[in-house]
Length: 315
Ligand code: DGY
Image 1: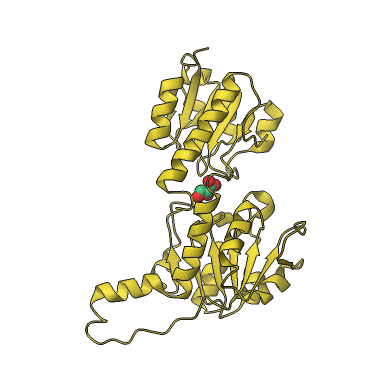
Image 2: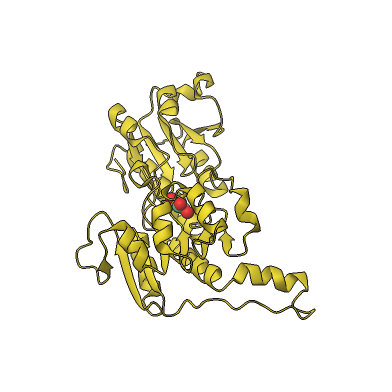
C-alpha cells in the first residue's frame, strides 16, 4: 500500500538523504524546531507521525499539538529529549537508532581521549601559529598507555569504548547502577570511589532525568588534578558549572567534550582552555552511520505504516 498520502512532520533539520526519502514515502510537513506548537496550521495538525533529530526530540507540547500523532521516529539513539512518559500515556510509539552508531561514537570517544591527553588540539594551534618554527618549546603531555580508564555506563557504546582501550589501559573499571553480567571489567559500585580510582572517566551512559548531573563537583574532585573527563553521552549528565569550575581551578586535568547542556551553546570559559578539546556533537556524524541511521528511521516508519512491530522500539 502506498504511504504517500500519510501526513507526517519533519521536526527541525534532518539529513538531506532522510528528508528526500521521507518525501518519497509520505506527505511531509516541515516544522522548525523552534516553532510554537500551539500555532501549527490545520494541515500540519493532521500529521500521524513525527521525525526529529535527537537534539530536538519531541516535547509533550508538540505531541499535544498533533492530535492524530501515533508515531515518533527519532534520528538518534539518545531519546532524552522525548517526553517518553507523555508518549506512553498517549499511546504514541517511539523508535530510535541503536547499534548502527555504536562504533563511530566509540571511535570519537577514544579520539577525544587521545586528543585531550596528548594535547593534540592545542599543539595543532601552536604549530599553525608559527611559534614552534620560532623556537617555542612545546609542553610535554601525559601518556594514554598505562592509564586506568573508568567507563561511566557500560552499555553498547561503553563496551565498544572499553574494547578499543583494552590494549592500552592498565585496567578498565566501570560504574553502572548495577553490575553487567559477564563483563570482564571491574565494577565499582560507589560513584565517588569509581572516580577516585579512575585516571580518565569516559561518560557513555544514556541521558535523561535519571542521569542528570551524575558527574558532579564531588565526582570531579575525586577524579583529581591529573584526571581527564571525556563525554560523548549527553551534556546534562555532567554538572557543567561544576566542570567549568573544576577546570578553571585545576581540580581536574582536562576534558574532551562532544556534548553540552545547551547545545549548540558551549560555555565560553572553555574556549580559552588548552587542556580542553571541544567537538560540536559529532559522535554519529560520519557518512556511513548517518545513512544507516536514516535507513533505520525509515524502516521503523515503514513498519508502523504497515501496522507491524517497530524494528527498534523505545516504547
Ligand atoms: C545519538 O544518536 O544520540 C548521539 O548523540 C549521536 O551522536
